[in-house]
Length: 346
Image (cartoon, rainbow, N blue to C red):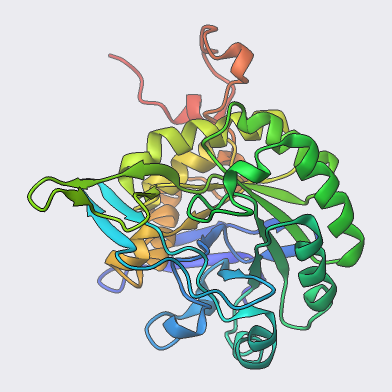
C-alpha cells in the first residue's frame, strides 16, 4: 500500500511497528510532510548534511541567510560554549545572491526535501531585490525573512523591531512571490505579539518565534570577552522556557501559523511548542551536537503521540495554550486533548 503524503510511520527496529500519525503541516501554499525543520544558520545550505541525514524525512530545510552581496561575517572568535547552550556571532557570513543562485540552488533542488531560503537585508529595498531574483526560482518552497539577527551592526534585530516597518516591508515583498513567506522574529523586544500581528497584516504566511537571545560570556582567566564582538546570540536549552513563552504569545495573537524555535533538543521539547500553539518547529543547536538530531526529534515526537493514541498532530496543537488574558483562570476540567491525557489524581 502506498503511503499518502503527510502520514509519517515510525517503526522500532528492535520491535514491532508502533503506529502512524498524521503530521502534515501547511504554511500558506507550502505543504510539509511533518513539522520538523532545520533552523537557518545551523545546517549550512542543506547540502552539507546530505551525506549523513536523509533530508527527505524532515519537514524541511532552511538555508543559511542569503544577502545581496557576499559577507565575510564577523572576525573570530565567533562561537563560545555556555553551560546550557552556545553563543554565536557569525555575522551572516554567506556567499551572496549570485553565487547562491549559481552554486547552491542546483544542489538544493536535488535534496529531496522542502527548501526554505532565508533572506537578509539591511533595508527593505535589499530584501525586495533578493525576492525579485529568487521569488519564482524552482526548488524553493518558501522564504524566511531574517528580521532578527542579533550579530550585525546594520539591518539586524534592533532595526527590524518596529511593527510598522515590518508590515510595510512585507507588503512590498508579498507581490514578488507566490511561495510561502515567513517572518523570523527577535525575542529581545517589548512585544513579540505586536511584531507577529504586523507581519500578519503585511501578508506573511507564518512567523517564526524566535531567533536567539542577546548574550555575553567573559573569560576571567584571560581577562577578555569570549566573543570578538562582545555579545552574541544565545541558543540551546537555556533559552527554551523563554522561547516557549514567546511562541505562545505569538500564537495567541495571530491566525497565521507560528513556527516555534529556541532550545529544542528532543521530541518532547518540540511537543511542548506545538502544545502551546506552534504549527511546526525548528531544530538548531542540536544539529551541532548530533547532526542527525532533527530526525531523532521527529521519531521521539511520533513515539509519544502513538503511545497516547493521538492520530493527528492537529489534535495536540494548542492543547496547552490558554489565551494570555486567560492564563490565570482556572483550568477546565476536561475538553482539550491535554486535559484528557493528563494523569488523574488518586
